[in-house]
Length: 428
Image 1 (cartoon, rainbow, N blue to C red):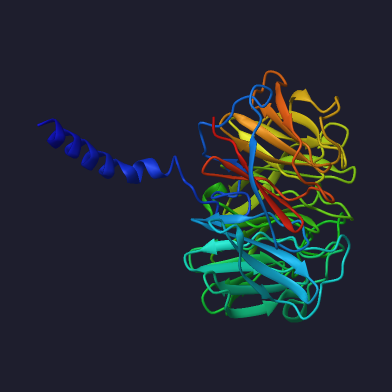
Image 2 (image 1 turned 90 degrees about the vertical axis):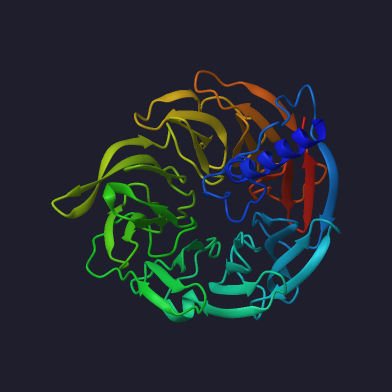
C-alpha cells in the first residue's frame, strides 16, 4: 500500500511540474535572462558571502576576446568572441567543458574602440541569432553552427558604425527578429526570423528626435512594451529613447533628454505605461509616461534626474518591487537605490563601492550581484531601506575590463572574462 501511495504521489508531482518549471527555470536563453530584465528566478543561493564563499567549480577557455555575456540552454552555452581570423559565434559544452563549435561570421576582426565581441546570442528553439560588432545580423543552427542567413546593417540600412561597435543582442518576438540601425533609413529593422527577409523598417522621416545624441544604433537592446494599450518595441538609440509600433514599424514617440553624444548604453526599464532610462557621460535619467491621447501615443516626462543624482554609464539597472538598483556616476558604479515612480533616492550614490569602474548587475534570490570593472563582485541585499553589503568575491581570473554581465543558471554563477569562462557554485 505504501509503495502504491508513493507511486501516486510521484505521479501527482509529475503533473505539477509545468506550473513549477517557471519558478525553477534552468535556461538563460538571451541577453539579461528570459525576460531581458537582469533578474534570475534562482532560489536557495548562498545568502551571505562573508559566511560562505562561492566555490570555483571549473574554468574553461576558447571563447575568444570580447565583452559579450553568455546564453545557456540545457548543457549548451553560447557567446561571441574575436579570433585571429575574425569574429565568431562560439558554442561551449558544459559537460565536457570544451568548445563544441566555432563559426567565424566576419571577413576580418572588426576594428573599433575596445576591440572584442559585444553580442550575447539569442536562442530560439534550434536557432541562434546574433548581431556582430561590425553590423552582421545572422541566424545559425545552434547545434551545428551552420549559417542559415545573414545580413548587414551598415551595407543594407546605412547604419553608422558606433565608436565601440554594434552591441545589440537581437530580440526575437514570435516570428520576428528586431534590432536597431539608428540610421535615417531605418531606426529599427524587423526581419522574418526564419528567412531573414525584411518585414518593415522604421524610417526617421520628418520626425524631430531632438538635438542631443547622434544618428546611430546606440548600444542597448530592443525590448517589448505594451504601454498605453499598444504593442511596441522600445530601444535606446543614439538620439535617445524611441517607441515603435510592433505591427507596422511606425515611430510612435521619442524622448531625447537621456541622449548624449558619446554613447547611450543601458537598456531602459519598462513598468506598465512607464519607462525609465538613463545614460552616462554626465547626462542623467528620466521617467516617461506613455499615453494614448486621441489615438496618438505620446511620451510625457514625469521627472528628470541630473547626472549628479543618477547616471548609469553601463552595467545596466534592475527593478525589484518599486525600486531600481544600479551603479551610478560615470564609469564608477557607486551603488544606488531609487524609487521608480518618484525618482527619490532611497540610499547610495554618495559612497564608494567595493570595486572600481562600472558595475554589471544581476538580481537573484533577494540580492543584487554587482560585478565591477576591476573584477570584484559584491553581494548587496535588495533592500530599499538601507545598503546591506553581504560580502565580496574576487574571481580566480581577471584580465581586462570585467564588463561581461554575470549569469546564474541552476545555482551556478557564470563569469566570462575574455577568452576564459569561470563557473562558481552559489548553492547553499
